View (cartoon, rainbow, N blue to C red):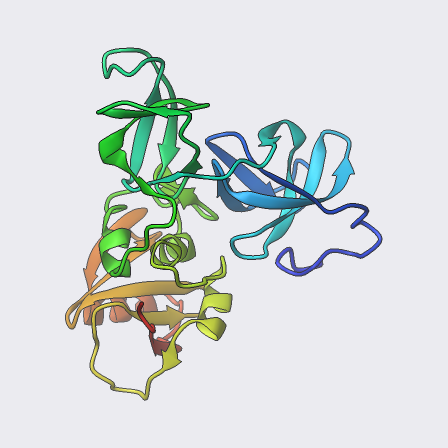
Length: 263
C-alpha cells in the first residue's frame, strides 16, 4: 500500500486548491471513509489535490501528510490572527462565559478574529476567551512545557488534539509551537529531528528518545513525558523504568537519542 505520507499518484492530483479545515477536528484518512492516519485541527491549511465525491484528497501544509477528508469539513482560506495556546478551549455563543458553548477547540487550532472585547475574541466559531489564545505568529521556546499541557490526555492512535493524542502527535504539537518543522510520525521524526547523540550521552530537557514506533520527550535527566498505550494517556515516567518496561513488553530497546536545536 502506498505510504500516505508520500505524494499521491500524479494522475489523482487534478487540481491544487488552497483551503483550510473548517471543523474543530477531523480525521485524515488513508482512503475515503477508511482508517485514520492522523488528524487535522481547525484552521490547518491544506491543499486540495483531488475531489472524490464527498471526499477530498489533501496535502496538510504543516507536515506534507496526504490523505482524505470530508469535503464539507473544508472552507476558504482565512489569514489566522490567533492560535489556541491551552490544551482545549470553548467557543461561546456570546462574549459571556455563561452563554452556550458552540465548539471545543484544541491547542494549536488557528482562528481569525472578527472583533475583540476585553475578555474575548470573536471568531466564526464563536467567542473565545482571550486567556486561551496567543497571536498566530507567537513562538514558544520550550517543547516540553507545551507537551506538558497535554498531561493526562487520553492516548489515541493517530490523534493530534487535546481530546486524544499519540506519541508522535504530542511531539509534533510541541515542536510546531516552537517553530521547529516536524513531521507527523515517529519514524519520520527520528530521521529528521535533531542531532543523533552517542550512546550513554547524558539526558537533557527537550531531548528525544526513540524506539521502533515510539517517541518520548525528556523532561529532566530522570523523567520522560510521552503519550503511551501503557498508561493510555500522556504521562510522566522514569526514563530507566520506562526503557525497561518497553523492552520487557516486547517493543525493543531505544533506537536513538537525539537533541533538538531549539529557537
